[in-house]
Length: 437
Image 1 (cartoon, rainbow, N blue to C red):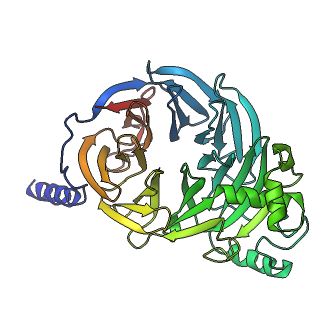
Image 2 (image 1 turned 90 degrees about the vertical axis):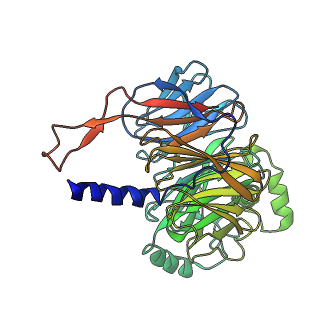
Image 3 (image 1 turned 180 degrees about the horizontal axis):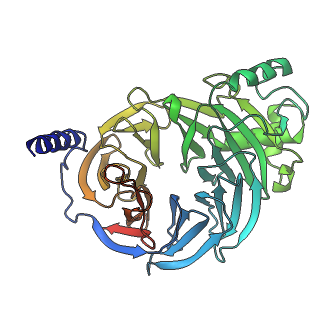
């Protein structure tokens, strides 16, 4: 008995030493779980996305996307027909949404009024994270660890049948692809939304993770195995793709002319391939479209991410129990904040200057940080939530935070006795937690 107590004491002490620092200034109105809505459903879940103008919460849950009315806490509908829904992105018109289907290798568009699927894009790889960039009207689907073989399209060059995207010859490109095949390579699928079609795929070294966009035309993607953040200039990339697709001579005048063309000038018979996977960093001709910001060793394996567009700051949760704050203009790390283990998602409330960290894989808590000035942050509250409450969305209008999770029970049929106890989801326990103050 003494040995058991001693072991428990050592474990508890070790875990407590890894927790987020205690709050420095408790808010006058602390956050708490205001409501729990049981919406049911089965299968694993991925991202949640908030539509603040419509008061709807979209949840990628197994073979469907569940749509919850946050005013009533009830299901407003569902979007079906997926093998595995992973991520949801909403356009800036309030009319269309998009869902990545990882197992099917597709991105589907849907009507946000009727929840009907209105279009499908075949990605040629398994898309995970999905982000819509409003200034360019482009949709970016992130396909981690994609296979170069089987991604059929023509190489981009000076014309329709020119050299590679970086201006190198065919022999060099073939050799580079053989070398790239030996290391992790991800693909960023570029989709034009008007009309809906795949216009390009970008091969990138490393294993890509989550993605987010700011209001300045930039898209950010975590490169997990290289401890980097990739920044894509969506507007610049859009202009380049348009004159590549036009087949005209690569001059500044032709690029500007292509940029002024109507949307139907985007139509292509076969999407382009921009191969940026040859080395750890883009070539000089590609750096205007993508830059890589190293964050290690201070941040190992960046996970959840959120962007402060006004102050040009990016918040990234790292597996080595840190939250780093990155200057999105220079790539400089301006702050590093200790966290607890298992931070899966990061949310940011621009209006109130609050950062939310969901620890669903750790102790099941929500940590709230206050952004006092752009580079000074303080933990104001650590709120116990639920185990597995790892997906997060913030309503910028009300300040409410939404998490999803489910209960686990013992699976006696699959368990092999004491020491081999297994769990399974409790039927009907899938739930939304509404958190506010």
